[in-house]
Length: 344
Image (tube, rainbow, N blue to C red; front, side, top):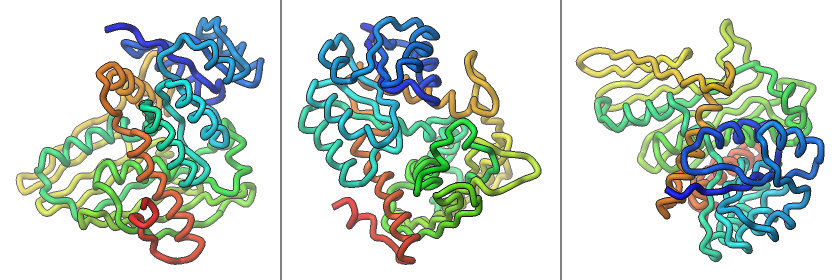
């Protein structure tokens, strides 16, 4: 397979994980990087041996010489950068949150579709080893038809120390973390028909909400609860684990703290350790997320080489992004939101 060459735009906090993962991916490598901050550009360029460095994305695209672009900037810049990639016919990966509004997200998907350009949103949580294990256990059919689920991420981890800008936004936990958990709920139980949400701000030193509880009515008839919190102190800090409970017509699945997967049916309970690998460049407790970064980037590379759509395509991610917008609408109005109406 011919090695694909990529360009990375954005050399901030999380992009370093993406650069490490690109080094491990088979069939692709990063050939150029871009960032408006010359110091960040220099640090990442020297760390990963990238000599092609740009402070201007338009110059990067004008020079070309790469097969795809990985956009790892903050959300406000996504729309113009994605449309720039579409104009240059360059396949594009875009970091989450995909857009600032659902209308912007739809416009970006349309721009890439009209240009015939593949688009993937870097929604890596569904690629975590334990989440994939839950999906496989459900697909095995031993618990029958799932009718209820819970997807929970509750922590007191100081996420603001590494990403202080998160404390300044009017929106926080649903947009930053809940988007992942909502995507996992869709991945496991299918698309959503209606949503009801409640939020709170417990930490007085931030602007946005740090607790959210969201009720989902799935199109399959299943009901699930997505609950996320950065204000929950526990005896053992579970960060960054997503815990899952599924009840089915013939049994249950439980993904509990410590990456313990329990599948119970009429024959009893089977317990499996579904811990993620600790990659050579990863560090605990982030290794779960870091491994999923590698997994989604390998998936993108394989799908791009095969000419196939990625799992978290822009079109697919619209269905997750709509849940984020609906959660904020529901929390503000107290109403249940029709998801289908938002996507029309």
